[in-house]
Image (cartoon, rainbow, N blue to C red; front, side, top):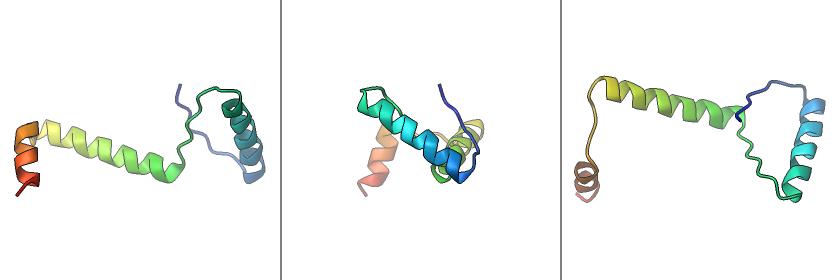
Length: 68
């Protein structure tokens, strides 16, 4: 499940403490802050735009370009 929330500083500290306790028990928790969320969203939207505009390259084409 993915959850994007907006909360006050005091609430966020309590939530982070609780999440940390879960990881100490062996549960998997991944925390992504808003900056990283926006960065990843921008990359996904750019990729979708490239697909729509047929700006796609094969792995071989990409590797050849990187090796120049």
